[in-house]
Image 1: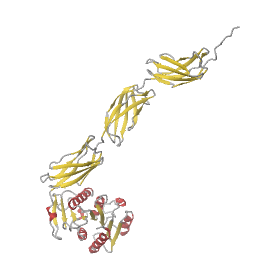
Image 2 (image 1 turned 60 degrees about the horizontal axis):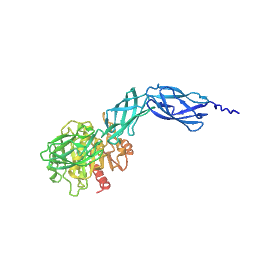
Image 3 (image 1 turned 60 degrees about the vertical axis):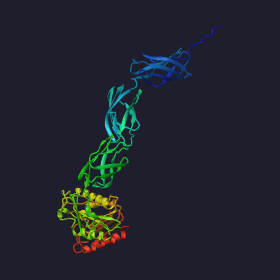
Image 4 (image 1 turned 90 degrees about the vertical axis):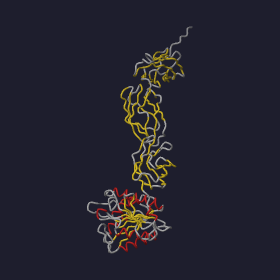
Length: 493
Protein backbone atom coordinates (compact mmCIF):
# COMPACT_ATOMS: atom_id res chain seq x y z
CA UNK A 1 0.00 0.00 0.00
CA UNK A 2 1.30 3.44 -0.85
CA UNK A 3 0.70 6.32 1.61
CA UNK A 4 1.03 9.71 -0.07
CA UNK A 5 1.73 12.87 1.90
CA UNK A 6 0.39 15.94 0.20
CA UNK A 7 1.39 19.52 1.06
CA UNK A 8 -0.79 21.40 3.51
CA UNK A 9 -2.70 24.51 2.60
CA UNK A 10 -0.81 27.57 1.41
CA UNK A 11 0.34 29.96 4.12
CA UNK A 12 -1.21 33.34 4.77
CA UNK A 13 0.73 36.45 5.82
CA UNK A 14 -0.99 38.95 8.11
CA UNK A 15 1.81 41.28 9.35
CA UNK A 16 5.51 41.99 9.49
CA UNK A 17 6.90 43.94 12.44
CA UNK A 18 8.62 46.29 12.18
CA UNK A 19 7.07 47.13 8.86
CA UNK A 20 9.90 49.49 7.85
CA UNK A 21 13.69 49.28 8.18
CA UNK A 22 16.41 51.69 6.95
CA UNK A 23 19.05 50.85 4.39
CA UNK A 24 22.30 49.39 5.80
CA UNK A 25 20.52 48.13 8.93
CA UNK A 26 20.27 44.52 10.19
CA UNK A 27 17.00 43.79 11.95
CA UNK A 28 14.95 40.82 13.23
CA UNK A 29 11.42 40.84 11.82
CA UNK A 30 8.47 39.20 13.59
CA UNK A 31 6.36 37.59 10.85
CA UNK A 32 2.75 36.60 11.62
CA UNK A 33 0.28 34.51 9.59
CA UNK A 34 -1.02 30.90 9.30
CA UNK A 35 0.12 27.53 8.09
CA UNK A 36 3.82 28.11 8.76
CA UNK A 37 5.50 24.72 8.24
CA UNK A 38 8.92 23.21 7.71
CA UNK A 39 10.47 24.63 4.58
CA UNK A 40 9.07 28.14 5.20
CA UNK A 41 10.94 30.87 3.30
CA UNK A 42 10.63 34.65 3.40
CA UNK A 43 10.91 36.69 0.19
CA UNK A 44 11.76 40.40 0.94
CA UNK A 45 12.60 41.39 -2.61
CA UNK A 46 15.82 42.66 -4.24
CA UNK A 47 18.86 43.82 -2.16
CA UNK A 48 17.48 42.51 1.11
CA UNK A 49 19.25 39.41 2.43
CA UNK A 50 17.63 36.88 4.77
CA UNK A 51 20.37 35.64 7.12
CA UNK A 52 18.27 33.47 9.42
CA UNK A 53 14.69 32.19 9.78
CA UNK A 54 13.22 30.50 12.85
CA UNK A 55 9.68 29.08 12.96
CA UNK A 56 8.24 29.76 16.40
CA UNK A 57 4.84 28.23 15.73
CA UNK A 58 2.40 27.66 12.93
CA UNK A 59 1.54 31.35 13.07
CA UNK A 60 4.82 33.11 14.03
CA UNK A 61 8.35 33.17 12.62
CA UNK A 62 11.41 35.34 13.29
CA UNK A 63 13.38 36.46 10.27
CA UNK A 64 16.78 38.19 10.36
CA UNK A 65 17.33 40.53 7.40
CA UNK A 66 20.11 42.82 6.17
CA UNK A 67 18.86 45.84 4.21
CA UNK A 68 21.37 46.58 1.48
CA UNK A 69 22.64 50.10 0.81
CA UNK A 70 21.17 49.88 -2.70
CA UNK A 71 17.77 48.55 -1.71
CA UNK A 72 15.09 50.63 -3.37
CA UNK A 73 13.60 53.19 -1.01
CA UNK A 74 9.91 53.07 -0.37
CA UNK A 75 7.23 50.38 -0.04
CA UNK A 76 7.47 46.88 -1.52
CA UNK A 77 5.57 43.61 -1.09
CA UNK A 78 6.94 40.66 0.88
CA UNK A 79 5.62 37.06 0.97
CA UNK A 80 6.30 33.72 2.63
CA UNK A 81 6.36 30.35 0.88
CA UNK A 82 5.92 26.73 2.06
CA UNK A 83 5.53 23.50 0.13
CA UNK A 84 1.82 24.30 0.21
CA UNK A 85 2.26 27.48 -1.81
CA UNK A 86 2.98 31.21 -1.52
CA UNK A 87 1.14 33.61 0.74
CA UNK A 88 -0.58 36.84 -0.04
CA UNK A 89 1.71 39.92 -0.14
CA UNK A 90 2.12 42.34 2.81
CA UNK A 91 3.67 45.82 2.42
CA UNK A 92 7.16 46.48 3.82
CA UNK A 93 9.04 49.82 3.49
CA UNK A 94 12.74 50.49 3.03
CA UNK A 95 13.79 53.76 4.63
CA UNK A 96 16.85 55.89 4.14
CA UNK A 97 19.64 55.18 6.67
CA UNK A 98 19.48 56.73 10.15
CA UNK A 99 20.63 60.34 10.32
CA UNK A 100 24.08 61.42 11.36
CA UNK A 101 24.71 64.73 13.13
CA UNK A 102 28.08 66.30 12.37
CA UNK A 103 27.86 69.83 13.77
CA UNK A 104 25.69 72.46 15.44
CA UNK A 105 26.29 76.15 14.74
CA UNK A 106 26.61 78.08 16.97
CA UNK A 107 27.95 75.42 19.32
CA UNK A 108 27.39 77.44 22.50
CA UNK A 109 25.02 80.03 23.93
CA UNK A 110 24.11 81.77 27.20
CA UNK A 111 21.35 80.89 29.64
CA UNK A 112 18.00 82.61 29.14
CA UNK A 113 18.48 83.22 25.43
CA UNK A 114 17.20 82.14 22.04
CA UNK A 115 19.23 81.53 18.91
CA UNK A 116 18.78 80.39 15.33
CA UNK A 117 20.90 77.23 15.02
CA UNK A 118 22.00 75.24 11.98
CA UNK A 119 22.41 71.45 12.05
CA UNK A 120 24.63 69.66 9.53
CA UNK A 121 24.79 65.93 8.92
CA UNK A 122 23.31 63.31 6.63
CA UNK A 123 19.96 61.65 5.93
CA UNK A 124 17.81 64.51 7.22
CA UNK A 125 14.15 64.26 6.22
CA UNK A 126 11.09 66.48 6.76
CA UNK A 127 9.53 65.81 10.14
CA UNK A 128 12.94 65.28 11.74
CA UNK A 129 12.92 65.81 15.50
CA UNK A 130 15.66 67.30 17.68
CA UNK A 131 16.24 65.66 21.03
CA UNK A 132 17.87 67.25 24.08
CA UNK A 133 16.59 67.41 27.64
CA UNK A 134 17.01 71.04 28.72
CA UNK A 135 16.48 72.85 25.42
CA UNK A 136 13.31 73.82 23.57
CA UNK A 137 13.26 73.70 19.77
CA UNK A 138 10.71 75.25 17.44
CA UNK A 139 10.46 76.26 13.78
CA UNK A 140 12.40 73.15 12.72
CA UNK A 141 13.02 73.28 8.97
CA UNK A 142 14.87 70.66 6.89
CA UNK A 143 16.60 72.48 4.04
CA UNK A 144 17.94 69.31 2.39
CA UNK A 145 19.28 65.92 3.44
CA UNK A 146 22.38 67.49 5.02
CA UNK A 147 21.10 70.76 6.54
CA UNK A 148 18.35 71.80 8.96
CA UNK A 149 17.63 74.93 11.00
CA UNK A 150 15.65 75.59 14.19
CA UNK A 151 14.95 78.22 16.83
CA UNK A 152 16.59 77.12 20.07
CA UNK A 153 15.55 78.37 23.52
CA UNK A 154 17.92 77.96 26.47
CA UNK A 155 16.01 78.26 29.78
CA UNK A 156 17.55 80.33 32.55
CA UNK A 157 17.85 77.25 34.78
CA UNK A 158 19.95 75.25 32.31
CA UNK A 159 23.24 74.07 33.81
CA UNK A 160 26.31 75.82 32.45
CA UNK A 161 28.08 72.86 30.84
CA UNK A 162 28.08 70.76 27.68
CA UNK A 163 24.79 69.07 26.74
CA UNK A 164 24.37 66.34 24.12
CA UNK A 165 21.96 66.94 21.23
CA UNK A 166 20.85 64.35 18.65
CA UNK A 167 18.34 64.23 15.82
CA UNK A 168 15.73 61.57 15.10
CA UNK A 169 13.94 60.50 11.93
CA UNK A 170 11.70 57.47 11.31
CA UNK A 171 14.95 55.61 10.50
CA UNK A 172 16.44 56.17 13.96
CA UNK A 173 18.57 58.56 15.99
CA UNK A 174 21.94 60.10 15.28
CA UNK A 175 24.86 60.22 17.63
CA UNK A 176 25.10 63.24 19.92
CA UNK A 177 26.94 66.52 19.36
CA UNK A 178 27.77 68.74 22.33
CA UNK A 179 26.26 72.21 22.78
CA UNK A 180 27.83 74.23 25.59
CA UNK A 181 25.65 76.46 27.79
CA UNK A 182 27.37 79.60 29.06
CA UNK A 183 26.28 81.82 31.94
CA UNK A 184 23.52 84.20 30.83
CA UNK A 185 24.34 87.69 29.64
CA UNK A 186 24.58 89.71 32.86
CA UNK A 187 22.61 92.85 33.63
CA UNK A 188 23.42 95.49 36.23
CA UNK A 189 20.23 97.16 37.47
CA UNK A 190 21.29 98.93 40.67
CA UNK A 191 24.28 99.91 42.79
CA UNK A 192 23.25 100.53 46.40
CA UNK A 193 24.36 102.92 47.70
CA UNK A 194 25.20 104.69 44.47
CA UNK A 195 27.97 106.80 45.96
CA UNK A 196 30.84 106.76 48.44
CA UNK A 197 32.93 109.26 50.40
CA UNK A 198 36.64 109.88 49.96
CA UNK A 199 38.73 108.37 52.73
CA UNK A 200 36.02 105.99 53.89
CA UNK A 201 34.96 102.40 53.40
CA UNK A 202 31.50 101.72 52.06
CA UNK A 203 29.52 98.52 51.89
CA UNK A 204 27.94 98.20 48.47
CA UNK A 205 25.55 95.80 46.74
CA UNK A 206 25.42 95.35 42.96
CA UNK A 207 22.01 94.04 41.90
CA UNK A 208 21.29 92.47 38.53
CA UNK A 209 21.00 89.10 36.83
CA UNK A 210 23.18 86.20 35.69
CA UNK A 211 26.11 86.81 38.00
CA UNK A 212 28.29 83.69 38.21
CA UNK A 213 30.20 82.75 41.34
CA UNK A 214 33.92 82.46 40.69
CA UNK A 215 33.82 84.07 37.25
CA UNK A 216 32.31 87.53 37.82
CA UNK A 217 34.35 90.73 37.96
CA UNK A 218 33.45 94.36 38.65
CA UNK A 219 35.25 97.00 36.61
CA UNK A 220 37.92 98.84 38.59
CA UNK A 221 37.74 102.50 39.65
CA UNK A 222 40.93 104.45 40.21
CA UNK A 223 41.55 104.97 43.92
CA UNK A 224 39.01 102.37 45.03
CA UNK A 225 39.78 98.90 46.32
CA UNK A 226 36.90 96.46 45.92
CA UNK A 227 36.59 93.42 48.18
CA UNK A 228 33.86 91.00 47.12
CA UNK A 229 32.49 88.76 49.87
CA UNK A 230 29.41 87.19 48.28
CA UNK A 231 28.03 86.50 44.81
CA UNK A 232 24.64 85.06 43.93
CA UNK A 233 22.86 85.01 40.60
CA UNK A 234 21.17 88.35 41.36
CA UNK A 235 23.56 90.28 43.61
CA UNK A 236 27.16 90.92 44.53
CA UNK A 237 27.96 91.93 48.10
CA UNK A 238 31.18 93.89 48.40
CA UNK A 239 33.06 96.67 50.14
CA UNK A 240 34.69 99.70 48.55
CA UNK A 241 37.71 101.16 50.32
CA UNK A 242 37.90 104.70 48.92
CA UNK A 243 41.21 106.56 49.07
CA UNK A 244 41.35 110.23 49.96
CA UNK A 245 42.66 110.95 46.44
CA UNK A 246 40.00 109.00 44.53
CA UNK A 247 38.57 110.99 41.59
CA UNK A 248 35.55 113.12 42.46
CA UNK A 249 32.30 112.66 40.59
CA UNK A 250 30.47 109.89 38.74
CA UNK A 251 32.42 106.79 37.78
CA UNK A 252 31.28 104.15 35.32
CA UNK A 253 30.86 100.60 36.67
CA UNK A 254 30.22 97.40 34.73
CA UNK A 255 30.06 93.72 35.66
CA UNK A 256 31.62 91.05 33.46
CA UNK A 257 30.93 87.31 33.41
CA UNK A 258 31.67 84.61 30.83
CA UNK A 259 28.27 85.55 29.39
CA UNK A 260 29.30 89.14 28.60
CA UNK A 261 29.55 92.62 30.11
CA UNK A 262 26.68 94.70 31.47
CA UNK A 263 25.73 98.20 30.46
CA UNK A 264 27.37 100.70 32.82
CA UNK A 265 25.85 102.29 35.91
CA UNK A 266 27.25 105.21 37.88
CA UNK A 267 28.96 105.14 41.27
CA UNK A 268 29.69 108.69 42.44
CA UNK A 269 32.52 109.73 44.73
CA UNK A 270 32.08 112.74 47.02
CA UNK A 271 34.33 114.74 49.28
CA UNK A 272 33.69 114.24 52.99
CA UNK A 273 31.05 116.40 54.68
CA UNK A 274 32.85 118.06 57.59
CA UNK A 275 29.67 120.03 58.40
CA UNK A 276 28.04 116.92 59.73
CA UNK A 277 30.41 116.73 62.67
CA UNK A 278 29.35 120.22 63.83
CA UNK A 279 26.63 120.54 66.43
CA UNK A 280 25.15 124.02 66.51
CA UNK A 281 21.61 123.80 67.76
CA UNK A 282 19.07 124.95 65.21
CA UNK A 283 21.58 126.74 62.99
CA UNK A 284 21.35 125.44 59.43
CA UNK A 285 24.47 123.85 58.05
CA UNK A 286 25.14 124.04 54.33
CA UNK A 287 27.19 121.58 52.37
CA UNK A 288 27.55 120.99 48.68
CA UNK A 289 26.81 117.35 47.91
CA UNK A 290 29.93 117.25 45.77
CA UNK A 291 28.74 120.54 44.28
CA UNK A 292 25.71 118.76 42.84
CA UNK A 293 22.98 119.24 45.43
CA UNK A 294 22.49 121.89 48.07
CA UNK A 295 21.39 120.41 51.38
CA UNK A 296 20.40 121.64 54.80
CA UNK A 297 20.64 119.88 58.16
CA UNK A 298 19.35 121.06 61.51
CA UNK A 299 22.24 119.18 63.12
CA UNK A 300 23.43 115.62 63.40
CA UNK A 301 20.55 114.82 65.77
CA UNK A 302 20.81 113.64 69.35
CA UNK A 303 23.25 110.93 70.33
CA UNK A 304 20.42 108.50 70.98
CA UNK A 305 18.47 109.29 67.81
CA UNK A 306 16.34 106.32 66.78
CA UNK A 307 15.71 107.50 63.21
CA UNK A 308 16.95 109.90 60.56
CA UNK A 309 14.59 111.72 58.22
CA UNK A 310 14.53 113.04 54.65
CA UNK A 311 12.07 115.80 53.65
CA UNK A 312 11.30 116.75 50.02
CA UNK A 313 10.08 120.13 48.80
CA UNK A 314 7.25 121.03 46.36
CA UNK A 315 7.48 121.59 42.62
CA UNK A 316 10.67 123.54 41.77
CA UNK A 317 9.15 125.16 38.66
CA UNK A 318 6.53 126.78 40.90
CA UNK A 319 8.85 128.13 43.55
CA UNK A 320 9.43 125.00 45.60
CA UNK A 321 12.75 124.81 47.46
CA UNK A 322 14.09 123.34 50.66
CA UNK A 323 13.19 126.68 52.34
CA UNK A 324 9.46 126.13 51.81
CA UNK A 325 7.47 126.79 55.01
CA UNK A 326 5.74 123.41 54.98
CA UNK A 327 9.10 121.67 54.52
CA UNK A 328 10.64 123.76 57.30
CA UNK A 329 7.87 122.99 59.80
CA UNK A 330 7.94 119.31 58.88
CA UNK A 331 11.67 119.31 59.54
CA UNK A 332 11.12 120.98 62.91
CA UNK A 333 8.49 118.41 63.89
CA UNK A 334 10.80 115.50 63.12
CA UNK A 335 13.89 117.12 64.59
CA UNK A 336 11.95 117.63 67.78
CA UNK A 337 12.27 113.89 68.36
CA UNK A 338 16.07 114.18 68.11
CA UNK A 339 16.16 112.87 64.52
CA UNK A 340 18.77 114.28 62.14
CA UNK A 341 16.75 115.70 59.23
CA UNK A 342 18.02 116.15 55.67
CA UNK A 343 16.41 118.63 53.30
CA UNK A 344 17.80 119.15 49.82
CA UNK A 345 17.05 121.01 46.62
CA UNK A 346 16.04 118.92 43.64
CA UNK A 347 18.24 119.13 40.55
CA UNK A 348 18.22 122.54 38.90
CA UNK A 349 16.89 124.20 42.08
CA UNK A 350 18.84 126.71 44.17
CA UNK A 351 22.49 125.71 44.22
CA UNK A 352 21.80 122.21 42.90
CA UNK A 353 23.17 121.58 39.46
CA UNK A 354 21.32 120.06 36.52
CA UNK A 355 17.90 120.64 34.99
CA UNK A 356 14.39 119.83 36.11
CA UNK A 357 13.71 116.14 35.39
CA UNK A 358 9.89 116.19 35.21
CA UNK A 359 9.60 113.79 38.13
CA UNK A 360 11.86 111.14 36.62
CA UNK A 361 15.21 112.69 37.45
CA UNK A 362 13.83 113.81 40.81
CA UNK A 363 13.02 110.20 41.64
CA UNK A 364 16.75 109.50 41.38
CA UNK A 365 17.40 112.58 43.54
CA UNK A 366 15.24 111.11 46.32
CA UNK A 367 17.00 107.75 46.07
CA UNK A 368 20.37 109.51 46.29
CA UNK A 369 19.21 111.46 49.35
CA UNK A 370 18.04 108.25 51.03
CA UNK A 371 21.38 106.61 50.21
CA UNK A 372 23.23 109.61 51.64
CA UNK A 373 21.20 109.70 54.87
CA UNK A 374 21.56 105.95 55.32
CA UNK A 375 25.32 106.14 54.76
CA UNK A 376 25.85 109.11 57.06
CA UNK A 377 23.62 108.23 60.00
CA UNK A 378 23.30 104.43 59.86
CA UNK A 379 19.74 104.74 61.19
CA UNK A 380 16.33 103.62 59.92
CA UNK A 381 14.69 106.39 57.90
CA UNK A 382 11.45 108.35 57.90
CA UNK A 383 10.41 110.00 54.65
CA UNK A 384 8.25 113.11 54.34
CA UNK A 385 7.33 115.07 51.24
CA UNK A 386 5.11 118.00 50.39
CA UNK A 387 3.03 118.19 47.20
CA UNK A 388 5.35 117.34 44.26
CA UNK A 389 7.92 116.17 46.82
CA UNK A 390 5.38 113.68 48.19
CA UNK A 391 4.21 112.50 44.76
CA UNK A 392 7.78 111.78 43.63
CA UNK A 393 9.34 110.85 46.96
CA UNK A 394 6.76 108.27 47.99
CA UNK A 395 7.57 106.38 44.79
CA UNK A 396 11.14 106.00 46.01
CA UNK A 397 10.39 105.59 49.72
CA UNK A 398 7.69 102.92 49.61
CA UNK A 399 9.78 100.09 48.10
CA UNK A 400 12.91 101.08 50.05
CA UNK A 401 13.35 98.75 53.03
CA UNK A 402 15.40 101.34 54.92
CA UNK A 403 12.39 103.66 55.10
CA UNK A 404 10.20 102.58 58.01
CA UNK A 405 7.46 105.24 57.81
CA UNK A 406 6.27 107.77 55.23
CA UNK A 407 4.41 111.09 55.38
CA UNK A 408 2.59 112.71 52.46
CA UNK A 409 1.61 116.37 52.91
CA UNK A 410 -0.74 118.15 50.53
CA UNK A 411 -0.90 115.14 48.23
CA UNK A 412 -1.81 116.50 44.75
CA UNK A 413 -4.56 114.00 43.97
CA UNK A 414 -6.34 116.31 41.47
CA UNK A 415 -4.89 117.11 38.02
CA UNK A 416 -2.78 120.29 38.02
CA UNK A 417 -2.55 121.96 34.62
CA UNK A 418 -1.07 119.21 32.45
CA UNK A 419 0.20 117.18 35.39
CA UNK A 420 -1.52 114.12 36.83
CA UNK A 421 0.22 111.98 39.44
CA UNK A 422 -0.18 108.23 39.74
CA UNK A 423 -0.57 106.97 43.31
CA UNK A 424 -1.64 103.41 42.50
CA UNK A 425 1.64 102.11 43.95
CA UNK A 426 0.37 103.04 47.43
CA UNK A 427 -1.97 100.04 47.30
CA UNK A 428 1.05 97.81 47.96
CA UNK A 429 2.96 100.15 50.31
CA UNK A 430 2.71 98.29 53.61
CA UNK A 431 4.75 100.58 55.88
CA UNK A 432 2.99 103.09 58.19
CA UNK A 433 1.74 106.11 56.24
CA UNK A 434 0.35 109.50 57.26
CA UNK A 435 -1.54 111.77 54.85
CA UNK A 436 -2.14 115.36 55.94
CA UNK A 437 -4.03 117.90 53.82
CA UNK A 438 -6.09 121.04 54.35
CA UNK A 439 -9.82 120.61 53.93
CA UNK A 440 -9.67 123.50 51.43
CA UNK A 441 -6.74 122.11 49.42
CA UNK A 442 -7.19 123.40 45.86
CA UNK A 443 -5.20 120.44 44.45
CA UNK A 444 -7.11 117.70 46.20
CA UNK A 445 -10.54 117.95 47.76
CA UNK A 446 -11.33 115.96 50.92
CA UNK A 447 -13.50 113.63 48.83
CA UNK A 448 -10.69 113.01 46.34
CA UNK A 449 -8.15 112.36 49.10
CA UNK A 450 -10.52 110.03 50.96
CA UNK A 451 -11.17 108.08 47.74
CA UNK A 452 -7.43 107.61 47.26
CA UNK A 453 -6.72 106.69 50.87
CA UNK A 454 -9.40 103.98 50.73
CA UNK A 455 -7.23 102.19 48.13
CA UNK A 456 -4.05 102.47 50.18
CA UNK A 457 -2.87 99.46 52.15
CA UNK A 458 -2.74 99.50 55.94
CA UNK A 459 -1.36 100.85 58.20
CA UNK A 460 -2.48 104.37 57.24
CA UNK A 461 -3.96 107.52 58.70
CA UNK A 462 -5.51 110.58 57.05
CA UNK A 463 -5.79 113.94 58.82
CA UNK A 464 -7.66 116.95 57.36
CA UNK A 465 -6.67 120.32 58.81
CA UNK A 466 -9.80 122.53 59.14
CA UNK A 467 -9.49 125.74 57.15
CA UNK A 468 -6.18 124.69 55.61
CA UNK A 469 -5.39 125.22 51.94
CA UNK A 470 -2.75 123.41 49.89
CA UNK A 471 0.06 125.37 51.58
CA UNK A 472 -1.48 125.16 55.09
CA UNK A 473 -1.47 128.98 55.16
CA UNK A 474 -2.28 130.00 58.73
CA UNK A 475 -2.48 126.33 59.71
CA UNK A 476 1.20 125.33 59.84
CA UNK A 477 1.09 124.83 63.61
CA UNK A 478 -1.82 122.40 63.28
CA UNK A 479 -0.04 120.56 60.48
CA UNK A 480 3.13 120.28 62.59
CA UNK A 481 1.18 119.03 65.61
CA UNK A 482 -0.51 116.38 63.45
CA UNK A 483 2.91 115.09 62.39
CA UNK A 484 4.25 115.13 65.94
CA UNK A 485 1.24 113.26 67.31
CA UNK A 486 1.34 110.58 64.61
CA UNK A 487 5.10 110.01 64.90
CA UNK A 488 4.79 109.77 68.68
CA UNK A 489 1.98 107.23 68.41
CA UNK A 490 3.15 105.23 65.42
CA UNK A 491 6.93 105.12 65.17
CA UNK A 492 8.61 102.57 67.43
CA UNK A 493 11.39 104.29 69.35
